[in-house]
Image (cartoon, rainbow, N blue to C red; front, side):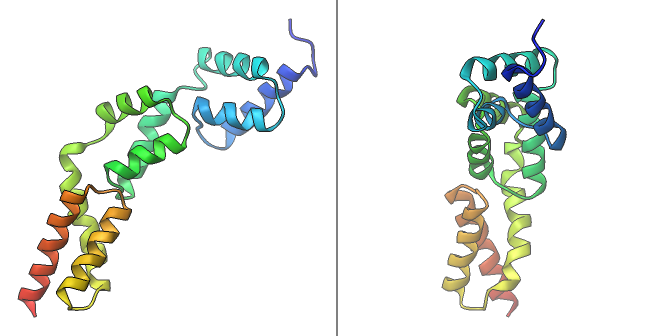
Length: 161
């Protein structure tokens, strides 16, 4: 039995409090507990207990987070970087993306994002193409897709004028 008010129990309560606000990755919980001053042993014990109880699952977290980012219109590169920033293990990132990221829809999502951005740019084709490319790139779309999509929209816009 773990004594009440032990560092482990405090770390566990802190982790539960963090999880009550939003889903977290194991890496995020580790980082936040370590920053709060808990020992590596206590942190690892807490993370393991949470994993065993099903309250902490990096693959479930990654699936949910990927779906959220895709809904927001982010591309593969931005999704991958965001998962890394959430302190997921590299192997978990690769597995999650291969399982849950709809790569076959990447170009279609880039077109949807371009539709939202194209009205912001003037009719100067080279300037519009560059700005749209940059916007798609910031959203995490691959350079090849951003080039194709920005070229299509700028050419279409020029033909309409």
